[in-house]
Length: 422
Image (cartoon, rainbow, N blue to C red):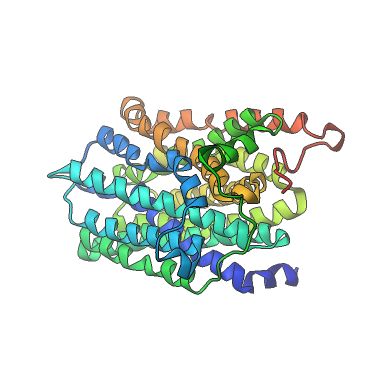
């Protein structure tokens, strides 16, 4: 047990935590925190739902991931290495686009706000391409499970900063200043990358379009049941994505203040998520990835039921605390298992491209499915909207069960369905 804890003190794991922070910071700033800003500015629910489309880059980042995998940045890659140079370039892009977003007014002119949010999401998604590949390549095989947990720890700390931190800053100084503070915090990622060595891995030989763009996808498509694996990746986190995006507007509609939301949802909630991630990592180690994925999906159904209780209870801080605790512990367990699963699917020869493809599919639910949620919530009302969301994890559960029962049937549930083995 002590050795399991000590592994997180290794420099490689500390670096992964810092990169996770840099990845987690901008996501909410073009998503749930932006939704709170829009709601505070009296933007309609339908428009808030459409704003989810600004994050479309997370869906399609696999299209330019082969370029990040293969191309060098003139004058920079030679000095820093391929992963480090691309990481710093994209981190600078996130910081500058956050500054641009801080200068817009969503109430008076929502289009410039949307355009700057699109840039935030583009540079954030591109940064994720590099950071995800960096993690898989930097860590030893026996460190990958701990790396998945360290990524989630850092990611959630970044979300505390861009969730609660942004809300506290907005309450004190206004939304523009809050986004300027968040831009400055991107320096954490830059410092981490500069202090971390370039991963030393074997690269695929240089070639033309087929080798650069098509080979990573061809490599993945050679695996049995690859299409069903991709479909599972697409739908597994759908429930998390839909409920997470509309939780903030629900709280505001029930009369909770920004300080109450920040303290309970954004601070206590992220701490609960970190607890869930730690539990998830332990469960993966003891029971395997697939069983933990099952548990995470079942718990997600329960957490969505808690939102129904919240809608019925109204402005009740005790119920809010219980809802946030259940939802975030459940989400942390599922996230730890999901990141470990995606990492196992990637070939180290095409790390950036394959992880970008998988995480882009997972982000599809966070954007396109979520964008329809505003109209659904407006039509159904909060109570029936969250009643409906209880069933959202069922497609992922069904696919996971189907895949598990058809992979290594002699050993029960398979632990590495679709794993590259490389």
